[in-house]
Image 1 (cartoon, rainbow, N blue to C red):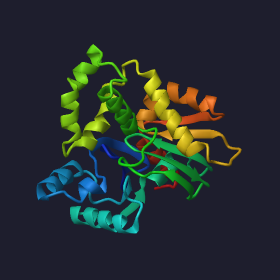
Image 2 (cartoon, rainbow, N blue to C red; image 1 turned 180 degrees about the vertical axis):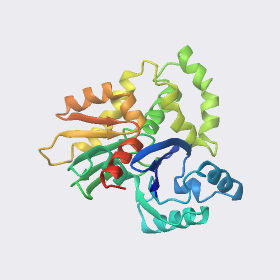
Image 3 (cartoon, rainbow, N blue to C red; image 1 turned 90 degrees about the vertical axis):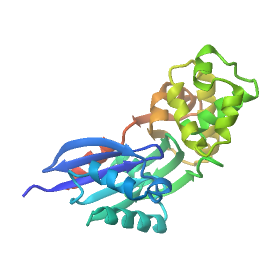
Length: 273
């Protein structure tokens, strides 16, 4: 009998899924974000839709790596969520452990998640030994795509950044920006902006964002290991600027992994799952 299992990696914007069977990746797909702030608000219609998307593996063991799943309370709530969907075997891990396993496997080092959110992690090959940042969108997230969006929006509203034709296509006007900022969907809107302007020449703003991350996270570390591995779409898309900023501050950019789900597949296959 073949052995099947699911692996999921849930960030603030989406959830990546992989189905393994007999030591092979047989399916990979995405669903909406299953961050607890969203998943725990699902109604029956949402749950039915998710179950339909997971039909091929809902009766198999699940290893779930999720943003917002660090506390025991959240882990228990998400365990109950998946049990209610029909899973009988579920392991819940925070996305921080997922990031370290994806970038380093069982080796020690430093990993930064630079996507919708940001955090710096020290890892000994088995467990996280140090965590800096991870304070969330309201008071933290330096170096993330979300923080970049906040810098961009603030610069446009204060007149420090000019409304080019390309930026006008995205933002329309200052009044339109203020309307978004006062809306209930302000965080998803901000999270979407880095991708929408990724092709524009905003070098100084990206470098400023990464330098703030270095100042608030890296410079306080006392270590001889000056290699930083990065997880997340924003950090990888803008890695040329990140590499320059790290180099100026005496650090080296290591692996840049935009989609950790594939590295997590390798990690679990290495455990003979």
